[in-house]
Length: 211
Ligand code: B16
Ligand code: MG
Image (tube, rainbow, N blue to C red; front, top):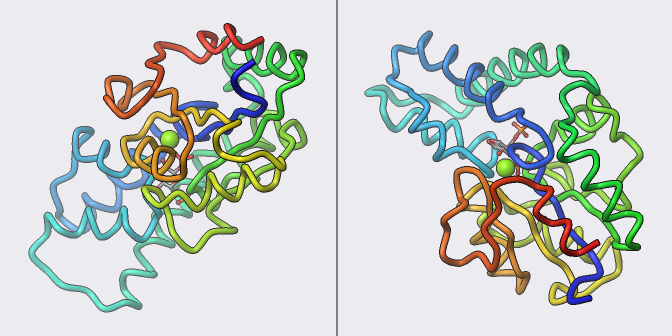
């Protein structure tokens, strides 16, 4: 088998928290009188919370202090976490659930590589709190995607070199991060057609060829 490990992005691959990110950023942008829509939201996929805020503020005409920006990010995160609180194991699709089980059964090491600082909370909500062999997330990195740090850390945690791991991503920033780290990438969702990816998936179960 070509790969011994798979590193999954979280938002947009394992579960659909991307919609909650959108709603929480939209509420903040509306309060600040800044235009924001779903197309612009796609630019935030995979990038850190503070970088996402900067992208949103670019469309406004005011400048803010670092303290104000920190408060905006906190405001968004509070609303986002309220929305996440509604999630349950029912938010884990059968497609993802059966694929993870099959890949684990085939002996692959499975990890998460996410920019999100809310990763442990989300995994707990959807019933995967102790499923993965390793979790690298926004709490243990200094550079967010498109920097490869989070995937390199995940590979290190499952004790495999990048060449032995496949990264699954839904964001262009994530595909870029994977390739920069020396990983093959399977792209889906918003990044499905990204030419830097080795595989182009419509759904996660297409990874079944590896089990
Ligand atoms: P948080 P991923 C990323 O998660 C999201 O795609 C991105 O939209 C978000 O800004 C980032 O996490 C940080 O999230 O505010 O929860 O720390 O796609 O890398 O799993
Ligand atoms: Mg994602």
